[in-house]
Length: 246
Length: 246
Image (cartoon, rainbow over all chains, first blue to last red):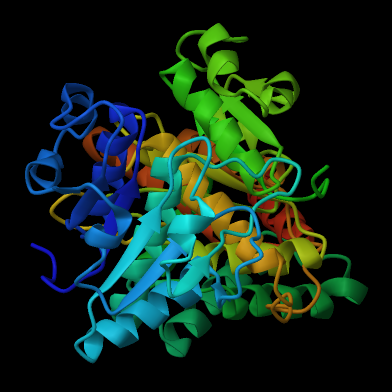
């Protein structure tokens, strides 16, 4: 379940039930479940919203419906308005990342925040934006700026989770336990150098030293695990057996 | 128009044309337009993809279609595989943000990169992931992890724009333009697999498939230069000559 004071996402006059359902899914994908609706065009509840929400229907059951934007955010201390077009209204303009980091900081100090999303086509009206504390704008391709409602919800919910959860470790899986030791790498290098020497690989003599160096450097440079090293030993041993079978 | 060396997004065996169209929109929303398809289920071109792509249809017209994953990424030096489930294959695991920052740094040094997306339901198969350089996983709500194909494409495209509209990260490891392409890696993998097969390396039969997968994954994972690849081919060829001399 989500944090009871996590941001409420407020869909203002949404038109298509499908987009409400898809928005619910996008919210719940990132652990948000406080949905609010302001006069959805096709009334409420909406069967096509339920059809699209599969798995996140609980958000629709719990959604609060309001007559006016002001009522929908009345309990909040800070409200973000998502808008594509720049407006004249003087207000902080934030990226989704900056906005959700700001929201996380506010929630941590006991504030209640909401993110408002306008209707599919028109987007938010200035009258509604005037009720926001700050504007959130997604930096999109100016040649193709139209992102749909559920996509905008997805990006804000994604940034909320990024702001409030530790990112995945960025590492080579198994690095901590499985990487080969330098000794294992040295032995691997020895094994290949010996056998390739027998095989006449280091030829001509004038280039042999450089070739040995490059081969030794290759093994040392690569992020080889112990399993990799075992496989590389095994490959070489098998080639030898093959040769000896003639 | 997008940067000609911006990442290619590769949709592997996509099922619904609608999802291909929505993915094209999501890419173009963030300025990416190099789409590649591997055996789309309903053939190509696909009218329902066109219907959904409205405004981004140009990406579908320009989409390249391939028979095999290996062919779709053959010209790339670094390939990311998006996957929800953790896999056994040893590979770096990155967040979308880290992956697209890494991609931006690679592109800035002349590399060609691709991001692979699996089919709607099943996601990517290990055989395909074994051909990737790194894995990208979106940190989602464990109680509701299912995000759809176009949403996953949207998040990666969004992170690409974030990564490239800020100062580019420092080079990772100096000059990378001499890294082997995926085609060169594929051929290296084929060469070793064929010869080791002759040599009887993939034994017992019950383990052969896993051994082949691990070997393929090894070559894909390592930062091999073109010189490394030539040396590895040369080593194998020399072992063969040695065997044949008896």
